[in-house]
Image (cartoon, rainbow, N blue to C red):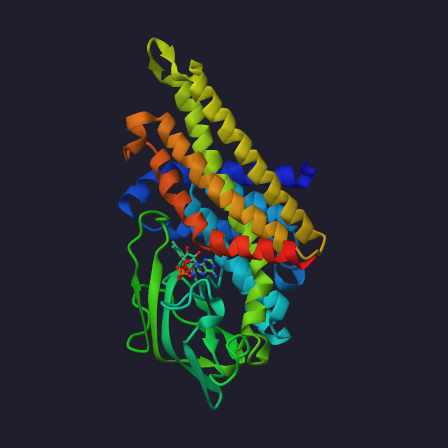
Amino acid sequence: MLTAEQQQIQESVRDFAQKEIEPIAARLDNEGAEIPMPVIRKMAELGYFGLVFSPDHGGSGLDVLSMAIVAEELSRAWLSVGSVMTRMIITGSLLEANGTPEQQARLLPKICSGELLAAAAFTEPDAGSDAAGVKTRATKKGSRYELHGEKTWCTFANRAHVLTTTVRTDASAPKHKGMSILLVEKEPGDRFAPPKLSGSPIPTIGYKGMNSYSLAFDGYEVPAENLLGGVEGKGFYQLMSTYEIARVQTAARAVGVAQAALDAALRYAKERTQFDRPIAEFQVIRHKLAHMATELEAARQLTRHAARAKDLGKRCDLEAGMAKAFAAEMAERVTSEALQVFGGYGYSREFPVQRYWRDARVFRIFEGTSEIQYDVIAKRLLES
Ligand SMILES: Cc1cc2nc3c(=O)[nH]c(=O)nc-3n(C[C@H](O)[C@H](O)[C@H](O)COP(=O)(O)OP(=O)(O)OC[C@H]3O[C@@H](n4cnc5c(N)ncnc54)[C@H](O)[C@@H]3O)c2cc1C
C-alpha cells in the first residue's frame, strides 16, 4: 500500500507524463532526437532531481519509494525521460554520502534544482562490469588533476555540466584502493573541449532521447577541490554506496516500461478482431495478458520492497539486486509478449510497442548486468 502522499505524487507525475511526455515520445524516438530541454527544465522545476536529498541540500527529503514511483511513471511514458533523473540521483547520492561539506554546499543544491546536470562516466572500453578496473589516470599537478584516458557509454555527457568520473589516482595501489572519483565540470554542448576532452555519440538500437558518448581525456584539468570527499583512494567504496538506490531506481524504470507495454497490449487485444471476435476472447491471448500482469506486479512489489528496506536504513544490496535482475528480465519478456499481441503491427514503427521492446533490452545490461546481480545475490545468500 502506498501512503496518501505517495499516491498524490504518483497521480501528479502520471498527469505530467501523460500530458507532456507521451505525446512527443514516439515522434522523437523515431527521429532519434534528444529530449527537448524545456522538458528537462520542467522536470527540474517539479523537483524530480532532488527528490531524495535532504532539504538542507536543496532536496525534498522524500523517501526512496516515492523516487521509485516517479521513475516508474516517467518511464511508462518514455524510458529516456525516466532516465534523466538517474544521473542526478547517482551524483547527488555520491555527494550526499561522501562529499566534503564544501562540495555538498557548492554542488548539491544546484544538482537538486537542475542548474547543474550530471552524467556518470564510470565505464571504460576495458572496464565495464569490473568497475574497479578503470585505467583513466588523474595525475595531481599543483592544485589540479590532469586526466588522460577513455570512458565509454557516458549517457547524457553532452548536456551535463558535471561528469562524475572514476579515475585511477594511484597506479601502484591494489586496483580497488587506487581509484578515486572526480567531479569533472565542463560546459554543456556537443562539442566538448577538444583536444583535451572529446566525445562522440554511440549509435544504439533503443534508449533514444539521450545519447551515450565515448569520451577521450587528453590533459583535461580538474581543480583538486573536485576530488569527491577530498581523499584519494576511496572511489570504489564511494561508488558502491550508490549501487542500492541506483538499482532500485532502475528496477522501477523497468516496471514503468513493462506497464506501458501491458497497457498497450490490453487496449489492442480488445480492439483487434480476427475470426469475427476480439483477439482478447482467445484463451491463449487472455492467459498471455494475465501472465504479463502477474510478472509485472511481482517485479513492482520486489522493487517497492527494496525501496522500503532502503528507507528503513537497512543494507539492501540483496533486495535491490533481486529487484533489478527480476524487473529487467520481466521487462524484456513482457514487452516481447506485448509485441506478439500486436502481430505484424507490433513490428511496425507506427505503434509504440516496438519502442518498449527495444528500450527494455537495455535493462539487463546497464546499472550492473543480470549476471553481476545474480553474483551479488548469491554472495549474500552464501554469506550466512
Ligand atoms: C544504453 C547504455 C547506456 C549506458 N549508460 C552508462 C552511463 O551513463 N555511465 C556508465 O558509466 N556506463 C553506462 N553504460 C555501461 C554499462 O553500465 C555497461 O555496459 C555494463 O556495466 C556492462 O559492462 P560491459 O558493457 O563492459 O560488459 P562486460 O563487463 O564486458 O560484460 C560482458 C558480458 O560478460 C558478463 N560478465 C562480466 N563479468 C562477469 C562475471 N564476473 N561473472 C559473470 N559474467 C560476467 C556480463 O554480464 C556480460 O554478459 C551504459 C550501457 C548502455 C548499453
